[in-house]
Image (cartoon, one colour):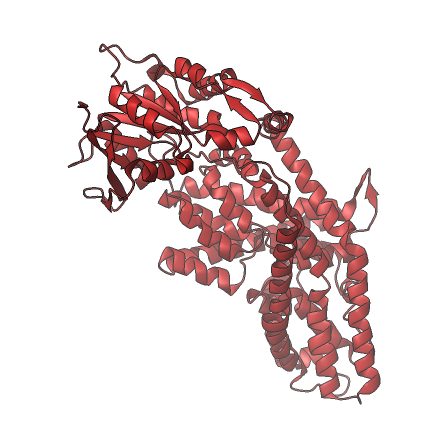
Length: 614
């Protein structure tokens, strides 16, 4: 009979612990919560090869004994015997993913250093061999100083050998500290790298290539340089690749507008269709190619496995402002839309860290800002090369960088004031490199393109109809400007008084109000305003750039761009912030500081541009 009564499976998330637990316990399982903690407990009875029963517990996945979440805290307390009503396990079974050995060895060393009876299950070894990686379990056992048993849980391979190793496990003799107990995190990482290299018998050219790619892409200095260069190429492509398609869409919208004018008699109905619908909605729809190109790059980076590596690289920079790499994925999601980005902060365990991420998410340049940036850049930034790159793409890249830098500065200030707290740690699994599937890419692009067009056909269309009505009533007297005479004009002229110091005119004031519904509405509002102001003489759906050049100065255009870097996003963002923070305190704080930043930086940009002679 075994002298052990209790064993526990420990390891990183995704190591295959649950599959191994199911294979070892079969139907002899029970599920409950740990005493006093709402963390699920899975326990079952395992029969050792000698027929002796032993209780086996599947502990929550953990990256270290320095707990950063309730799950990791439970794992730490159970291992150390500190959880009330839960005796410490007699034997620890560390489950390692053979295909991701180096990462999993970091935590394994920390557990082994405790000096408890320990066995290692080198799990999913079949997947490692499939990927061209052959390991030496005996060499790994010698390096770690504990028994190592190769297993394939889903095929029940190695289970008998593992049971035998558990029955025969012995504690480390003596009271002297384990030699690995003195290693810090950096030293354990170096040791993990050395051990993993030492146990490789052979590896395929593909596996060596992936390792070398990680050596470069995750390099502390070369990795960030590559990431910035990649982002730079993306924003160059957004302009360069989209131009022909965008010109085609502009021409198509113009043809429809010309056809309506040719077939319909002059009147309010025709003006409504050409100025209220086609000029406004059409001015947004023409940016569909740029949206598709941007999301194409994002989807490719996600599918290839690079996006997780970008999060790992960003951890160092985020630690400098009091955040962790856990915030990167929600912030990255906010480049598409702040709403899912804010919802994704639920994965952040530290409440102050999560709140800070929510508050800075609107500073990420969402896809709805892209049409605003694109129309202003096309109107005021010449399409000429600067060395080997285009000036327009360079300015767009600068705006995205400006938003990111602004978010990091705001995060630093918040973490030292209203959300004060220490940065939490961050460890994540690195997915395998793989080629993206064309079907998945096509489906993802279709979904995102449809979302953009649906917004154009619903929110933007509805706002434009209301704006057109406000711009056309009451009708102007002879010789009077229609916009000034309208309800919308009266509202805009009043708001323009407050915006005049930062270089904004009546037309911009008129665009800012409906843009709170959706950022793209700023473009459609400007197009509708200039269409109404031009009367029946011009088709402005594809001439918005000309109208902007006619009515705006370069300092005003630059100030407008600076405003949209910081200005609060749509009402949906405010609503989801209210829901995620359970009140109006933080949404109100978000609105106040973002409007303040937008006003201040727009003013600084405007007066700086004038001082420089632009």
